[in-house]
Image (cartoon, rainbow, N blue to C red; front, side, top):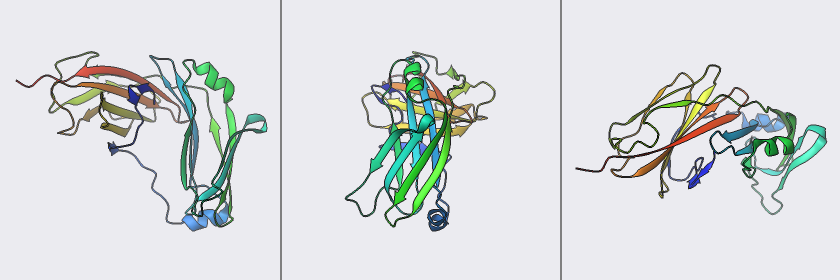
Length: 234
């Protein structure tokens, strides 16, 4: 979600555990029926920093998209993407806004309501769909272990613990080693309250950032962050 040295939602060199949306076998049928495989629009916020961003996630059918537009309430066009010189096009897109330190700015620029998606594929199919944006944020999680700023966290056999409010759909857990390209990002059900860090990821005497995001049924997310440092080798 939010920048903290490096972006917490970075995918490169990541250990990913996700409840993934698997591509259906009928990709061609989706294109023929004019449907996208997946559409979503939601807002992420960092509770402590009070910054926020909007995210659009789009997956076409089996063919690549050569054009995509998204129109918000009042027929205001907010996304207009084209790939004029590509024969393959782009099948999957994630588009995000800047992160002003006031979620009211994001809400003003992207009103709540229906967002209409329209796309064209390289073979001439037209895709249409709709997703709804809410301005309601889920309540954040609460850290239990490790404690904020803890400096003697074991580098082996570390199990994270947290609690979440009622009504949460799922949680995103992100662990990032400061100054390193490596991170762990996991999407887990709301019923999950612990996460065992894979052996070998943590290093002794290193600083880490831990973020947990609560995900509402409408897709909006509220992240909290904390730092901890692993114990030095003896």
